[in-house]
Image (cartoon, rainbow, N blue to C red; front, side, top):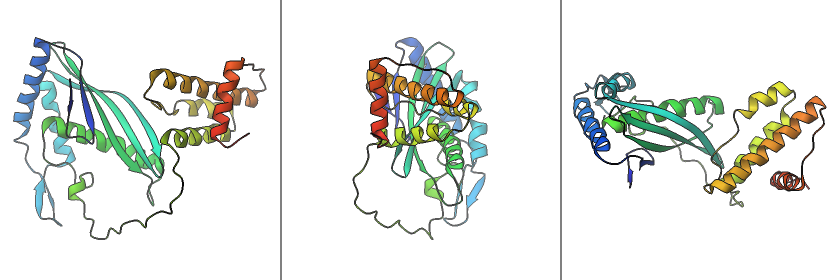
Length: 252
């Protein structure tokens, strides 16, 4: 059974069956009922309404623990699509009775003037977590800066329509960007630090995803060997994988 939460979008995958799962849902309902009494401790002067601030949401998140629940972030990855990135976060909501459900949340964001990718990525992590807690506890609003409905967008001007150019698939965009960063690494230490930022979840097919992961590892190892001067060999299948990656970069 798959159900939707209010996150944008967030899939809830049922992992356990029977009485423990019923206890999890009952505990969540009790936590939601208790959270409905959260005071609206801040005010949006532009739209003239009160709302629950991010601090209040985080304080109320303790209600999960009071009812035997815990929200555990499991993984985070991103995909590039033009000027936008989509942060995908995986959480597990667990109950002390032993049941758990997995939540998958997508959060779009992009680089902005005065906010390079590292800052927008950090803000996306913070905002997505706040919204996940808000959705679980059914708290109407979070911080004014994080709440899309509460933003003052009076000065907003729609971006001009981009020129119609062939659109690269998100997979190719993400791979090209990462491969370029690998090529730009000047030392083995810089390359090792970069490996931890390798994009994941680049294909829905597990076998193809594993193949891409293997190809990226080969590409990184080749770059490391070039920096250190160590010998490095590959078999015919691995050579073919590297050639496919090079093709994405526009290399022969």
